[in-house]
Amino acid sequence: MEINQLEALIAIAEERGFSRARDRLHRTQPAISQAIQRLEKEVGVKLFDRSSKDGTLTSAGKILFESGQQILKLRRNAKLKLRELTTLQNGKVVIGANEYTVQRLMPIVAAYQKLHPLIKIEVKRCLASRIPAEIIGTDIELGVLSFRPSAESLESVPLGTDEITLISPPGRVLGVGGEVSLRDLGAESFIAHNVPSPYRERVIQTFEEHGTPLNISMELPTLESIKRAVEEGMGLALIPRLAAEYEVSRGQLVASRVREMRLERELHLVYRNNEELSHAAKAFVKVARHQDGFHKG
Image 1 (cartoon, one colour):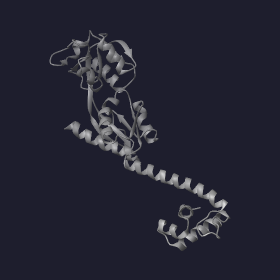
Image 2: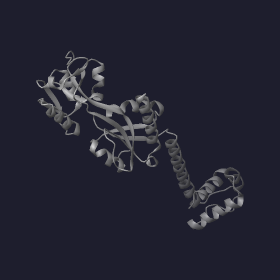
Image 3: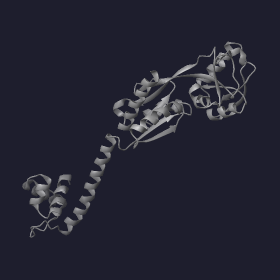
Image 4: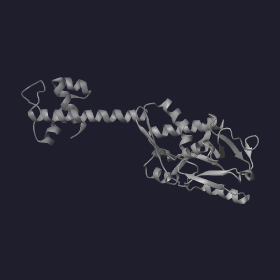
């Protein structure tokens, strides 16, 4: 049973005859007659009352007419949805990020929504170490990482750099000119992130290399909880600068550079090779590339 056969059946019934169906479908009358003959042969019953000249359907024809209408409606809806996807009138982008990297993602999301307000964006909280595998496995389309993945099937767009910064409570300015020496921090109490990471190890190693004690008085599970604890005067913390930008801009925290600690990293938007991406995800990558250029400028 072919689509053009159902189209012929429906057109004849609705136009009340073969000749008007011919004009509606822009096909020859013999072609329409042959389509009906093949359809009747396939289903094994007559679909039109041949004694009538106005396209009267038999009982079997009425059943197939109703089913055919539903099939053609489903076909039209499928084509419409596909067209909406390609024109970015519909769709969804699923992005993986952790608590920290989602901060860099938000300006890109805002710019994307202005351009494509009908596309839904879902940001899933993922461990950074799992994001490449989840992209390759198509659980997510895009991900934000603080390192460039090595898999050949993945590509990335740089999203700028970030570095570790020292945060202290409002009104507590350390050092001079926004910079403090590591040796001046030996008597301070620190609040640390209890999630293992290469940067936590590098901070500990830097203190050890300079012979300065790192006094960790509290460990917390999230960057948000660490920032709130510092704001309440419970201690100092070393966290990514990006994660503290909002609070620093509002005077809720004070940020300082540690002279001997230059732990910089580059953030990346990671995705599968472009030909495997949805139209919505391709458009997101395009916005990210533009944002990266703006950020560098």
